[in-house]
Length: 102
Image (cartoon, rainbow, N blue to C red; front, side, top):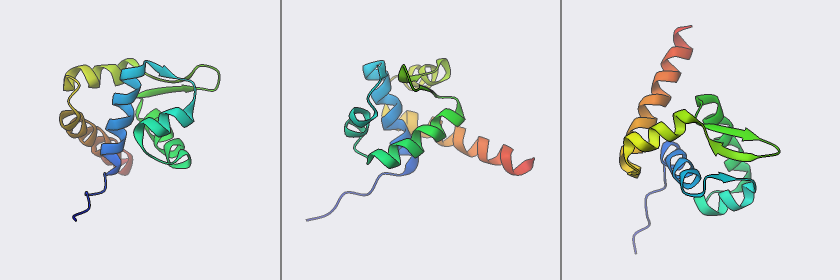
C-alpha cells in the first residue's frame, strides 16, 4: 500500500487559511490544530509565520481570524486549495526575496 505524499509547509498554510475561512474565527487553537491535522506546537509556528505574512490576526482574547488580505487570497483562489497554494507560494517567495535583498 502506497503512502500519501507529506504536505508541504505551504499546503499546510493553505489548509489553515481555508479552515479559518470556513469557521470565521477560532478561539481554541487545539480545535484548529485538529481541523488542519497538525500538532499544536507546529500550529503555533505556522500561525506566527502567517501573522508575519499579514494573513491572520492572532489575539489572545479573540483568537485567530483572517485579515482582509487573508480573505482576499481566499476570494481570489475561489476557495480552491491548489490555486491558494500557488498564490501563497508566490507570497512566501516574494517575502523571502525581499528579506534577502535588504
